[in-house]
Length: 424
Ligand code: FES
Ligand SMILES: [Fe+2]
Image (cartoon, rainbow, N blue to C red; front, side, top):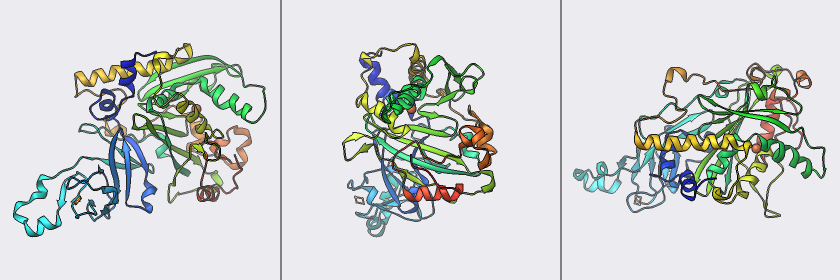
């Protein structure tokens, strides 16, 4: 359990709060690059800050205050120029550093005053990587934006899926270090959702948690595996500070504010070797719904939707004063301790780096992670080998993770893979 105060501290992410300060030390994925194929601006709310993400006519991204500093119009209705974004009310223009670079009337009639030099709005650096747009909202100098190993893989079909999950970020993050829930929430509940009463899958016998350079790993042995299983020897990782990485896909939980979280998922599917070399021209981004509009209930059919059911079920903000942690929650306790330690560290010494920060650009060509079956993804397999490889070398005929995959994404996937998808 956590005291009321500590629970509040771990959940609050606004500017100037201890957790807000800590999370701002890490790059956060906030959108898909392809979202800007057909738009110039996107209003976003990140850690309680209302901002506008834009792509200007020169192709540069910016992330600035939502409100124009002149008379507070909404810059998400602004339009972009060769350099930066222009407010649609009186035409003030801002570059990606937030500096006002044009005030059409003042510049014309009162040029000597050079009023624009005195006006600057909040702005944060944005980088594009792996089809995602990433923001850094912390103090300079910014650390490296990690090139996680799967971002370097070739011959894959990648998709980015966003979901708005109406609860606090940390109950979503705790799910990154929770091996037992796979057995119940995904496997056994899915059996029940199909209308069957069993048999349930083999039980977990042993779990373990370890520190890694970039997060905490979890390891497990079930009734049908032993200590030679890669789920025990390699494990999976809670990639710090708010991501689950399973070996071929990432799930970030980015705080929108203290009661809402943006789920950002990145999926890699290796095309069969006989389809290669394959180059993806565009990484699609799509929004997945969380609610079944017909019934008003949460969607339960897909793996991540099931996770969302758990998180929102804990309430907008989980009441950790009334929880009872067991041995299965050792990883959750480790994660909380790391976050509290780091909040204290950076408060005492703002120049210190918290856990899992990468600053050495020479190590950032490809940052290795624990990956079960790495060769399948990196080197690929033939379609014919699917049977012998169990998971099929990631050549999936279904998309089991999130509900609502648009038809055009499905078609693009089928085109890449060379086969038809099956319904989930
Ligand atoms: S309110 Fe934006 S230019 Fe006037
Ligand atoms: Fe899950």
